[in-house]
Image (cartoon, rainbow, N blue to C red; front, side, top):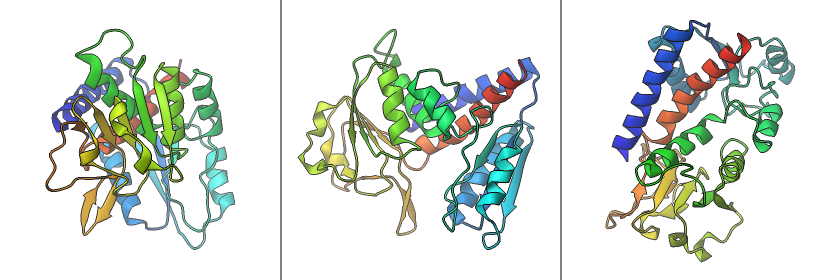
Amino acid sequence: MKEVISSLYESKMAALKAKIDAEKFDVKLTIVTVGDDPASKVYVRNKIRLFDELGLPCEHIILDEAGTTQADLDGLAARADHPMLFQLPLPNGLVAPDLPAAVDVDGFGSETLGQLVLGQNAVLPCTVQAVIDIIDQHYAENTSGNHFSGLKVAVIGRSNIVGKPLVVELINRQSTVSSFNSRSDLAAVDWTTFDVIVVATGYHGTLDNSQFVEGQLIIDVGINRIDGKLVGDIKHLDDVVSPAAITPVPGGVGRLTCLHVLGNAIKLCEMKQR
């Protein structure tokens, strides 16, 4: 699957570069972080590097954890006139403001999610779009038309960032979707009955690679640090070579997710300047 991810990344990056060069519209992103979370530093650095690579401005606002209030964040959101995101997680009970769809590059706001339910969305949450890309690419060689129609997809995880919006988007694309969460009896499920399984729980060992069969596509959204290593939500048993196609961690969904921050920023700036 690494080759598939790399191919997707390169083709989509080339398309974004061509769009920027052809359209000549201004693209800018503002990232807001609060505190000094190590994981957030990595994610933000990757996003800034991507914008730098294309010569695009990316403003990084760093707020002190001790002195930042919800009113400070809400004030920044109220003044936003171009794409913005609040890097999660936020400390001290702070929550990301409900950005209007016109500047909601992450696709987490209520307006954007409402548009998604109605099938009117301009952008998808970035990880959701990454998962959709992988499914689309995987089935493109064997099907024509709507690659999602009739696919039996299991989504494990119900977060507002991945699980819930992914289920809605798959339904919009005419897939047959089963949704599972932390209260589901995962041990009782016959996972071999699904064409695609998306694991997005944030818990390493949610499933393991012995539970899959040939012909399945397994998308591991999770990223966890175990014994100093980055691993996904799927546990890879040393004595098992799975016949299914499984996305790698790291270098899988996360790589495409970062790219879609750029893609969503371009879409929103393009819409503003029409």
